[in-house]
Length: 418
Ligand code: UD1
Image 1 (cartoon, rainbow, N blue to C red):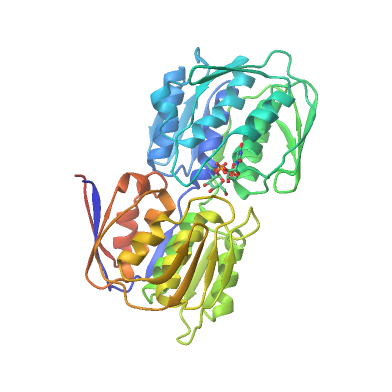
Image 2 (tube, rainbow, N blue to C red; image 1 turned 60 degrees about the vertical axis):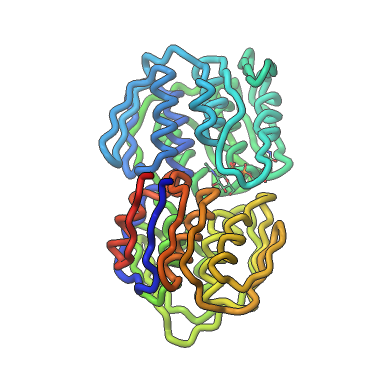
């Protein structure tokens, strides 16, 4: 089976350049189909989710040139609006194409999106929003057939600030006549980045990053050049990895504001953190005491996508801490794997309590989702002996060249493709 073999116990120190954000790149790549002419996206992370999204665009008829972190997309010859089922299942973000295709082609045919298994992930908020714009939606077999008809801008109040639904409705609203306002929308920085790209393409969108987004529909969109926002979750993962092994780290290409809730936890515990517009530096002061109580929340709260990695760090460094997952119903599988490594923790469906700090022992563990997989890698690096983390495919969905970056910090890791 594909796996990472990690030799624990090394101190990880040095500099890591943060890659572009997965959660910004995916909706922006989807959005590019709404334009005419070429979009050139730089700082795209080299991850399998981006590869899957590009495969979908190719299947729809887009021309793609992919040179490492720079991707050129020309959607001018796009002639299909049905996403092949096998590609749809590769990741959850394929659902973004519903809004983008409605605007581009007036029609979209999608099936159930795939993605990490972290609980039920319905798309009712997406669908309700598209229907409020006037799209008609038919369920046949396992497919959804969406037709734009005569979509008109309107006020949409989301029952929950879903990131994906906010982005999907933003894209569909570009194909609706008049003005759409999305209330109680998600405020994640990646949504601000989507707005930035679309406005460079000629869209008139305002308010991303606040609780109300306003979109003027039917403006012509032309391709543009855009540099993808850095990945705050990747940055937080390396920060915890280095501090967890007793090292010092400098993260370049990241603004500390994006990691506010994690930096607050570390600073409160006594870690030395310096930050500027495009770097974060962190090291131990030698006497920190981490005892925190964290609840995951939509931005600007503590991100659910850093919950597993923080827990792994706390297993060695944060006795008495309590971590509560408030966004996904089933995101604690990794914690059972940490227990296998000797973690003294109490686990319930949505909460982990760190009882005592103890030394972890390397063993065989399996990633069941992307961020849980990253948590197991942090644990393996902090553990005694060798840890084998199986199912690398989940980790590669969202971490660009992770083995290389860990080795660059002094970690010992090899990859077996199985
Ligand atoms: C995005 C991120 C993901 C992150 C999550 C929460 C991308 C590509 N992925 O996922 O990494 O973990 O935000 O920050 O940006 N929900 C519904 N109905 C819906 C939509 C969502 O009930 O129609 C629920 C979900 O099941 C979940 C919660 O709302 O419990 C949050 O989901 P959402 O914000 O939509 O996350 P994603 O966009 O899937």
